[in-house]
Each structure stands twice: as structure tokens, then as C-alpha cells.
Length: 118
Image (cartoon, one colour):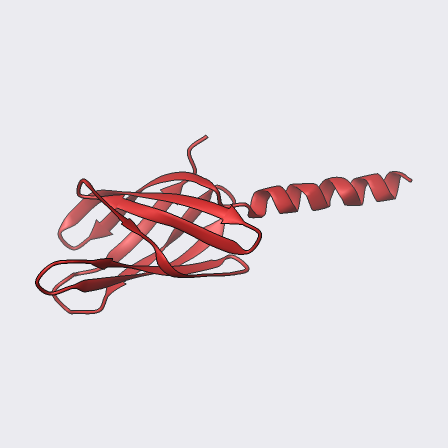
């Protein structure tokens, strides 16, 4: 009986840790310097939606894929020359980190680090 309770407890912890829902403040480091970069995620089962906020603007994330601890998605910056930003991230508990690249060479890209707000 104790073994079953321990297994149920560990399983509930694993399921709880896997939920990415919440606000994730972070920093983008680029060759041009650091910039605040915030991520808001909502997870329902394996489906993840959300938005990225930086430079005073918010963009909905698209083409989201969560595979184990790997989280990828993209946003499109609109304007005369739309720019697609690609996020390739790794989830580690209450931290998410990884790389940001762009569809065009004008954007320098960089590294991201987010920590879940509690």
C-alpha cells in the first residue's frame, strides 16, 4: 500500500511540474545588449498557447510544439518587412532557456532565460 501511495505522489508531482501555465519573466541577451522578454503560457493537456511581450508589444505564439522538455514556437513581427522569430527552448522545472533566431539576417538573435513567476 505504501508503495502505491509513493508512486501516486511522485506521478502527481511529475504531472504538476509538466504544466507550463503561468507568467515567465526573462531576459534576451543579444550582441546589442540585454532586453526584458516575457512569456505567458497556457497549457491544456499537451496543447500550449500563449504570448511573448517585449519592447512594449505583445505577440501571440504560433506553431507551438512541446516534445518532452523541448518547447519550440514562433512569432511574426509585422511591418513593411515581416520578420519571423523562432524560439528553441528547453524546460527545466521553473526555468526555460534557449535560443532565439530570425528568418532574416538583420535581427541578431540571442539567448533567452525565463523563470516562472510564483
